[in-house]
Length: 254
Image (cartoon, rainbow, N blue to C red; front, side, top):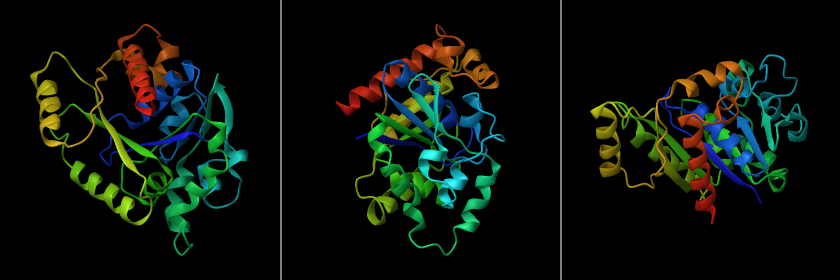
């Protein structure tokens, strides 16, 4: 039974797509069978994995609206052991089109249940908002990884995210848990990054991953080439960090 992890934080620009792409790719590199699901209408995970988001015939949009079965939406083995359900801007209209549909919070959960046994990990990139798309992801997920950027406003909005997770636990998915917080865009040259890490550790009663993702030029370049960092530059600091994070994620399972 595959482990379903949502990558969520309603703040934009904290590294959700970067984490989805590179964690998924590093897990695949370690021999795990991985499915990435792009739940963000911006489609950054889709393009960051080298897929033209506007050329995809069946995307998450078609899946949520019942126009395609989940098997038809999966792009298999876009790299070895890593498959993708893509998304594009069509998905932005899904919220409105789902109004009035019964049990709309469970659409993704019900679809993913059909293929869950085919994968070791299913990793979902959530949009930067607490929308019906995010609720669908949280209802389907076993756990949530929260990327936090090492910047002054890091904690802003985090209490709202935790509150939303608690509501989902109470009403839709009692098994859901926060798997952990991962720090991203860490700059060892600044005191601020260190202060943010210490501040979050003091204030957040959550698991925190030991691995901290550095601010890294090669990591920033990789999506424009449509490659995960472990393929774009296998020896870079970014690639090493995401391999360490993948090891931690695997070990949490054990």
